[in-house]
Length: 160
Image 1 (spheres, rainbow, N blue to C red):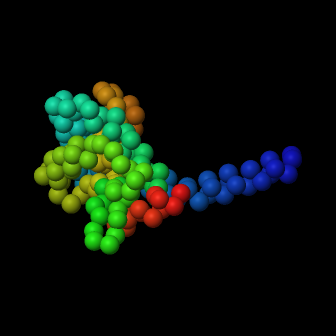
Image 2 (tube, rainbow, N blue to C red):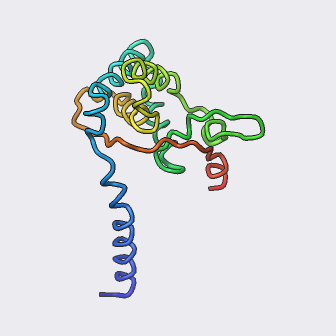
């Protein structure tokens, strides 16, 4: 085995070892106990929003990508700026993101059914992205139980 191949093997093995505990925490049926209907509630809310205006459908996929690209899928792209602290939502790289209103509508519906259970980071961004793509089948499984971000990541977004 060549030296560079050993290096690649070491890096891949290390990454797999580091991410294994995280991957074990994510699962498709995370809400089966706490909010059984969460996934179908979000799906119906997204379809309702997109049937009235289909334009944000692709925007939901882009919104999900921009959220996951910086610090992982933590919904930090949804945090609004406060005085003297600009948010990721308002960074130049995220100008033109669409679909915020669909995410908010889905969150309101799921909160009415399961208050305080479903986080934006967990189910509100990945599921609308999947459903916004127009996939009527639920064969694309989404892992849930992500941690919701509480910090801005504007500086990370602009210093890449």
